[in-house]
Image (cartoon, rainbow, N blue to C red):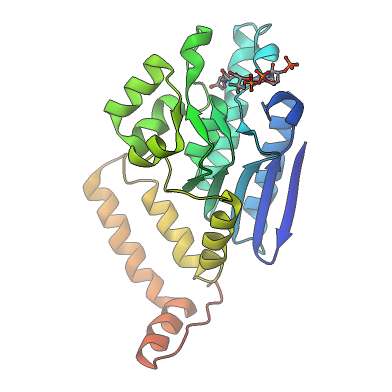
Length: 254
Ligand code: CAA
């Protein structure tokens, strides 16, 4: 099951299927996609944290028992469902933070990769071991791992299926920080981000998502256009005025 707890403007989404190391079956993944879709549209939610229940696992991947009986069409639909959840994390107009509290393997690592920021507990283990099952990462891993860590590291990890610990994950840029308890770090950043201009965050996320794809000149032009347009917002006027007046800004989100 998926638990969603709201605290002020921060939503904590917990994947809870501890009997299977929080591996995602159809019910849990469908539920996750639905909850992420609601949170994407809910303007009172400014930041989303994704974590796993218990101390052992973030998500140990897609449910292998379920996958062992899939035919080609069912496997395509299963891949598409995971892609939808990943795209929601990647494109929802607010920051998403993965708090990796244990194993983040296969589809679990892929969901974390779809988030804007990743923090890991010192006990976390991450990787794409699909090759050991005779399959490939199917929820974004062949693309997003390269975007986060670079193609050289990504190829080694997806080809070998090697699992990395938290310290190596930090060294290769797979996570932004290692911290115990990991949820404290996620909440600290979420609170910081919740106080910032939501319109500026939303716009930066949209532009940052274009950074590694498309045409560089066009992307810079989009940045220039949006940079200018933001000067019509209350938040830009407030943020600039607050600096000049030597006070803290109060952002309204438009
Ligand atoms: N799917 C289904 N069940 C899983 C699971 C998974 N991905 N991962 C763990 N479980 C289940 C185990 O089968 C076991 O259940 P039973 O007691 O009913 O057999 C229970 O969770 C506890 O697991 P273990 O006894 O194996 O615990 P452990 O501490 O010895 O090992 C582990 C933990 C290293 C995470 C190990 O469970 C493991 O290797 N899991 C599989 C990891 C994996 O390969 N993930 C990738 C899946 S493929 C994928 O995700 C495709 C994609 O890109 C979309």
